Image 1 (cartoon, rainbow, N blue to C red):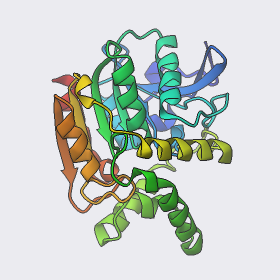
Image 2 (cartoon, rainbow, N blue to C red):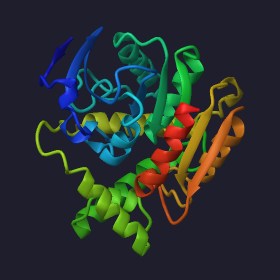
Image 3 (cartoon, one colour):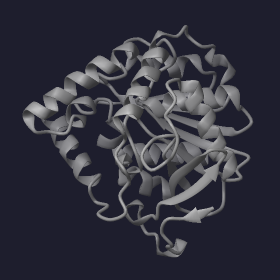
Image 4 (spheres, rainbow, N blue to C red):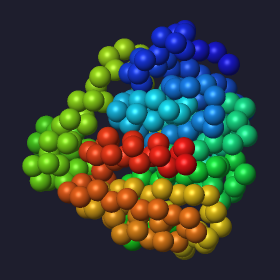
Length: 288
């Protein structure tokens, strides 16, 4: 294992100055960051479509890391991690498990947002002993309603962003109400707080592979979610356009130990708009 930056753990006060480290497992060198206490079951964060290390809201990371060890990482072919990005959720899940086991963990908690939530579901199904608790946010089950439309929506809002000189996430993650617009601007500003040692943006080829994987997930036959026996916290905004919010309700209903939280006047990025409330709920759930 080698570190791209040497920073003593006690000097890391926030996600914005957490060093980017690297770990080689098999044929992939994974880029990752970690924050929080060194003891206890770690929480592995699985990021969204096109997301890299810098796309996690520092308020969410710092809030959970105040109590728990948090690890964020770039999966195969994403950001600063090497290799080619797979075009199926199951292959992405396999790569994530490789990374987790290479860190030496026998049990972890998972927080998967959007695409990351799909990956987290597969990990819980295929490696049940590895996962203690699951937080699934802004996501949906295989074959979920509207998930096959993510590619079309992403392309549409990318064009909207270009035409209005705005980040597409302002449209994809947040409602167009006054509250949603303000929350989007605040979220995007927080993502820029880290000014040095930033991650590489996702490549077009990796973005295309992820879109294909999500499309395939949306076309799959529904999985038997009763096999996920871990406690599951499902959270989303009430008005998610990307992964329609009824998928969150469906997920929470179909897992044996599910709890649902929906935030009002919020979209796909509801956990970022309501980051204080989400962090409080997530920490309580993880420490229960």
